[in-house]
Amino acid sequence: MRTLAHLSDLHFGRHDPTIASALLESLNVSRPHLVVISGDLTQRARRSQFLAARKFLDQIQAPKLIVPGNHDIPLFNAVGRLVAPFSNFSRYISRSVAGHQLFSDDEVAALGLNTVRRLNWKNGRVSERQLAEMEAQFRLLPEHVWKVLVTHHPIALVEGARKFSRAQRANAALIASLRCGVHLVLSGHSHHAVSGIVDDELAAEGSLLVVHAGTAISTRTRWGGENSYNLIAVEPPHLSVTIMEWSAHAGFREGPRKRFVFDAAQWQLDS
Ligand SMILES: [Fe+2]
Ligand SMILES: [Fe+2]
Image (cartoon, rainbow, N blue to C red):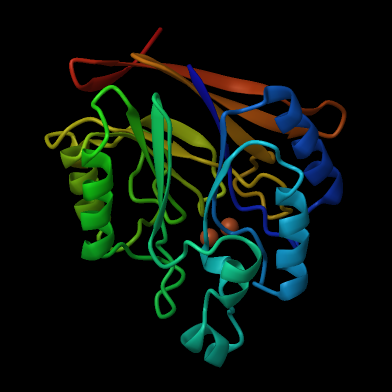
């Protein structure tokens, strides 16, 4: 059994320090095997904001897999964005922005893809090369290891849930994911916590579980949602996603939980 904490859209520079402290406390209690952070660590990619993010990350004991978000490259400094968009991210957060990052053990493998582009930073994009690399990495792993793809910009939508824009070439990314045995796709950017089975546009290609995260600690909550992160328990053939919701009087506590089962290569809700 493996537990993944899925955090996103911290937006240091426009964050609530009280909620940030409570999040660290909550992670110390839940003690996940891996902390996934699906981008937008800062509000404006400033050095001071990256330093605050770094200080926060250093207080998390678990291994971390982190991808950048569109807010992690300069917005107003066009020269900086075009010449060296990831300089602060690489310096303070992670050097693996150019390619991909992989965490794997004998039960779970998670791979992060950078979807942020200097000319199309808001919508994001996935390249052919990234997909080829993902397939090569995941094909090396045994079938029983559950495979997780992490991006900032969503590449998949949840059946029956709110719709929002996806990264360019998202369908190609989903088809490649299915080809190499990905079970689960995690993303941020929407600031909307929801999980479920991939919408029916790609149902004929195969079955994927899709998890979007809310904003963990920023004041940029959307659609009336609270600050939250996802706690994902992987115990094949079962998987559960619990939204850990913030409240001022109780800190982060267990909110709605969904249970799923992966049977005969199909995801289903597990009642
Ligand atoms: Fe964001
Ligand atoms: Fe974003």
